[in-house]
Length: 192
Image 1 (cartoon, rainbow, N blue to C red):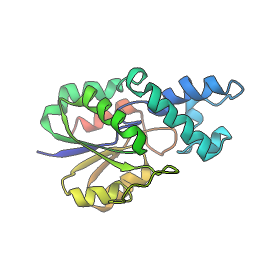
Image 2 (image 1 turned 135 degrees about the vertical axis):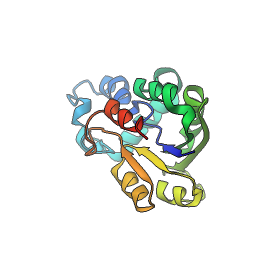
Image 3 (image 1 turned 180 degrees about the horizontal axis):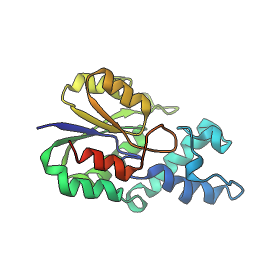
């Protein structure tokens, strides 16, 4: 049975879009950026903000809205309903330590029928002193040794997985060169 490693944010959900629309733009009413303009991730330069300001806003959205205001991506939910039982699944996210319990709860709440393993690589934040077991998802996948497929929105994670011999799917987002739409990506995954 194949094991699929899933990024959480912007693959299983639409975190960046919802954060932009429900947090950033409401707090920055003079900002005329739309989601499709976010050609970089992190998008702080596109937004005309510092990295610290962007991260604080995103973390605040996660802490106070992640569980209530963040639905699963419809395409992801439909894919799991049709195909989830045919594979093993691991969720692997890069998030700050303060937000990881919410992310794990969210994954298990929406995808827990299928996803039995949750792992995180701490995304560094000022003042967080956590042991470094792995630097990135590639280090985790190498240690884990069980991933056959990965789905991620970050090109560097897709490339790193491919270097390990793992089949990789790039979830199309404005900040990457993924072709098509999330719907077409899940369509390709249905052909596994």
